[in-house]
Image (tube, rainbow, N blue to C red; front, side, top):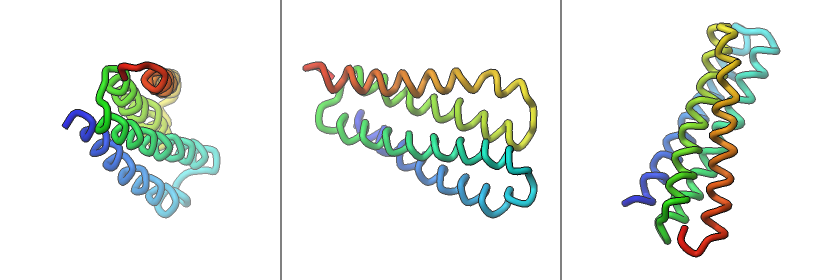
Length: 125
């Protein structure tokens, strides 16, 4: 069950990423300017990319669960929530202070990749 949680979360994040992309493309296109729409598209891109990465973590964790895969999955999940979530909120609200917190999400995403690399390189993932 441990590894399957990342498959479930990755699939849910993937579905939400498609929804957010469609929302931006169809409903925000006319409501916000090009710069804000570009911010939304960056959020969607990172959201979907890391949903796929999280699904890979899930596949690996179902075969050989381990601490580093758990760390990777948690970092990817939190990273998407913070990075993409705050970019979505920034686009919709224009509350500029949110932009100052976005890099925390980026650090979480980077940490997820580093943890995945450690898991791949170690005997005990």
